[in-house]
Length: 159
Length: 159
Length: 85
Length: 85
Image (cartoon, rainbow over all chains, first blue to last red; front, side, top):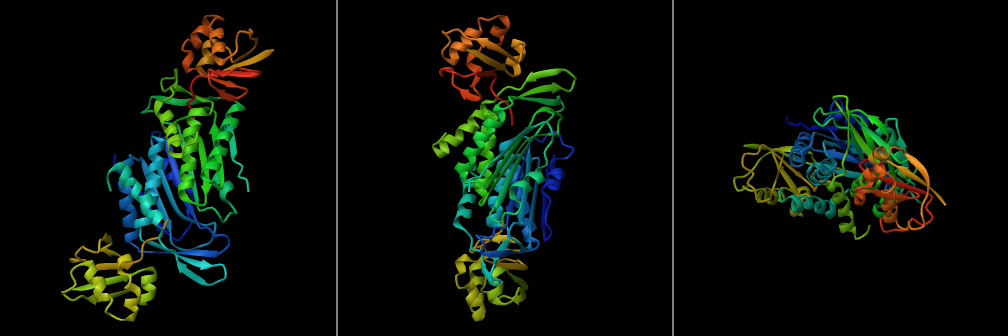
């Protein structure tokens, strides 16, 4: 049976328990559910918020492409990715991934893979708002994120 | 500040959202929370339940040892591990790990490491109850679980 | 053929608009050509696109390498490296 | 010195009890010695411990290798490889 990922970009917060439930409820073939929640940090008090800009349409499409690749590659039973947009205060949720599989390593790898690709190829941009009230800089892309993504090519021999 | 893991062995179910909240609420230094939930599968209808036996006292102590090693090794900001005992029906929760860190890979690795060690060294044993009503066999330990554990020694050069 | 150009993040801020419609000259074949052409369209474009190699481009909502032809793409987006997640 | 022996899972089922108190002979020094000794204590012990190499042992709630001395451990647990998680 084809597994269809659930992809959403929304300003509203998400409910991790409800999203796990949506993936796993009523099923008896799922042995492992891994969730990843990315949260806004205040960078030692420096920030009052992060503002997330995205490319509507392409953001959902791109996450969907990555999600389908993760489902196929790791044999996932269910996969959900939710990315918030707009202004998010420190401690607030930014992104959620829920990956379900019959076995635990597939669930871990599926969630990890999705996050690595999402960070480097889903069209979202973070702008910092300083605690001083000033609008700060756009967050710079990190080489470490590109390297994290590359490891999936080394391991599996595929893109 | 020393991070103290939360460790529980209980017959009652757990609430993933509440456990994430307990680790992350009120903090602005956590950038990533990874949860792992292990669930009871029915093995294509073969099973009506799994029964979890454990060694009270040592179970908590052993998970605590593994948890403290994970906190130190990956620099975790918070770590919770809950393992259920008693009879669990297909679809039911067995184990929960919540790992929080400032960065995502540490949270992923912390949860993954804890699960690999928990599976091979925390004193729990699963007995199968067949759908036919008969009590089945004790689940056999898998070589793959030992191998999964060994990879942490190769990567980090430590036990 | 009119193209819809869309800008995001600091590319949008520097150019000073989030989107526009443009007819592109025939000499603009590849994504690289497009970036070079736009840099000639005013100070704001030059400021936004001066480090062309860091600019990411999507053709009809799919990532495109700078060497790719823009072909019949109707929606062309320009933006900095992504920082979501 | 009396020791508390505790059994789990199929070791417990085969021996037919979950725990007992025992005085061990002085010849029992290591974990291996203990396993060999217990195998002589009746058919049920022999059935439980015949594949001694798979049996895991904890001394006062800490995993112990078969070569380790049992020392002054007061609580000695015998069980199959673990299958939690």
